[in-house]
Image 1 (cartoon, rainbow, N blue to C red):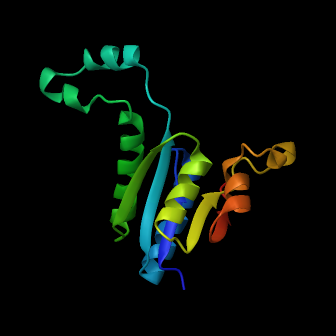
Image 2 (image 1 turned 90 degrees about the horizontal axis):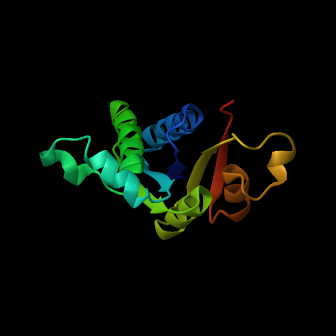
Image 3 (image 1 turned 90 degrees about the vertical axis):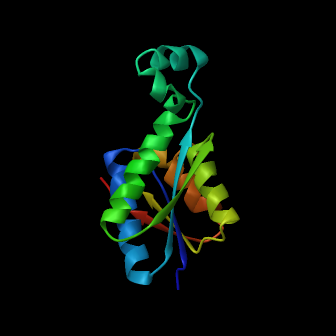
Length: 147
């Protein structure tokens, strides 16, 4: 039925609920789990400042996508605790576009997103990640109630 499941995360508690549901589905269906997070590059001045705060032998870890790498690592670790090995994808730019791109590139059968941002007048704005994903997905979409 669903062989490849894509879920997006920004590291928030509500995104964690969507990752949890996607992990449960991947486990029960023996499906591939792909976790996606988007990022905007960190400015050079912040990178220089952050590099001065870590020991010299660890400065290589300070990079423009360090925050998103940590977010993805935490989500993958959470999935692994439930017995699911996840592949992670960090993409520069808009969160919805990142999820949609990975879903298309990896021939996903299902995208899992949280419902955050879909209440009130905001649900009509294209900037809402769940709204944009639900309207442009190349596959089925499961919107998890996270709030």
